[in-house]
Length: 521
Ligand code: ADP
Ligand code: ZN
Image 1 (spheres, rainbow, N blue to C red):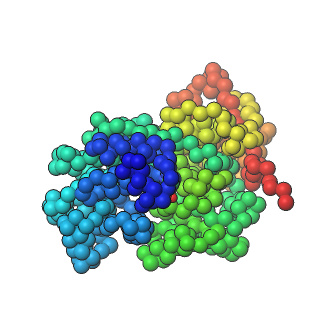
Image 2 (image 1 turned 60 degrees about the horizontal axis):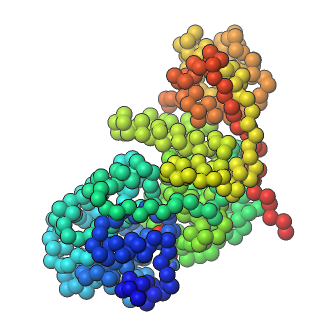
């Protein structure tokens, strides 16, 4: 038996390695550098914990998840592994104790927050002990393309210069080809061996529904399919986190809020309850979840559109780590697109940054509006080919498509006439009122009832037109800008206006309808 397998059995109590864990472990044990891409729940931790135990010296684990270090260290200690951590939450005495253990060679693993490595004293400390390996967890944090960039991570490339003989292993659950290349370059790991697992999570059922009354839709989902289940509900703002948690509680579903504006103590308590109790729902901003290891999260629901496909994948990936059937449910509507555009337009950062965010949003919209398998589309984003899965809403009840060319022409002409003839820009609401021939106060005020396009769209309902706007946005045939979410034409719009391009559209399903057949009692 190899030393690694022995540690797996004896210390961790597992019979065999999962996937390519064994290969990674062997590679790092023999001093090789590695870049490991594995979905959440895949078993990344053992990939560095075991080599750290097999090799001489202390394994240094760089992790941004300060809040979880105590838990990680406690659970390792309970297995008899000598682990400690150094981060900003400790007082001087606690820190000194850990430092002494490190120098005396009495640790197997030392967890460090990345910012500690910017402190020269930490580097000097590391020099006084013996390092078996560096593990860089959540390595996508080095990527400016990713969704969780941390400037502190950029300094990690220097580790190699200072300790050239110590093997490095970087791990992440986020991995488009672009991010992967960027991680390797920024951490100077271009020669590292790459281990790339499939990112498919077959037990997660992906569903994206039209947003009507999202809290009510959520309640319906929980009552019909997830009674008594633990789950995470993501909202964009702190206010909607609070409101949604109250709403669920008032409707008999135990729920607690989690966001950065809560007192530390409350936040920690709510997180601890989620981990400890059965069937609790956490309503959270995306501040919640990184590194949370709760195996039986049965659903992840998004009440607002995630900013990127990578973020969506990460967040939904927290469901079903135990491999049992779980639901990833997202409610999305036109207002989400308007709001996200606004956030991008007003965000700090340069044009390149805004362009990247825009591309992220476009990819997310494409996933929402796809008529083919969600999983195929999701995995394609991670450069993985996959057949239609049979376990997502579009596979289970394929959306009908319809020829939206005429509708698109009508809507774009309305935007065109306002923009070109009147030098005006309006949001979706006004455009739709014009198409429906509604003589609202605002229509009269702007003399919009004299436009040629006034009343030419009565064949669709208001909701129907909103769907058309969303799909035009997702297809890049229309754009939204500014504080008021005004609609403007894009370069691609003209082909539709000139009748040179057809516009297939997805027929809207009734909002609250679940794609999955309801369980019969
Ligand atoms: P990740 O960091 O990739 O999200 P973890 O390292 O937290 O995943 O592992 C996820 C779960 O799988 C943990 O509960 C872990 O104990 C378990 N696990 C990992 N490797 C194995 C294995 N070889 N055999 C059985 N269980 C494993
Ligand atoms: Zn599918």
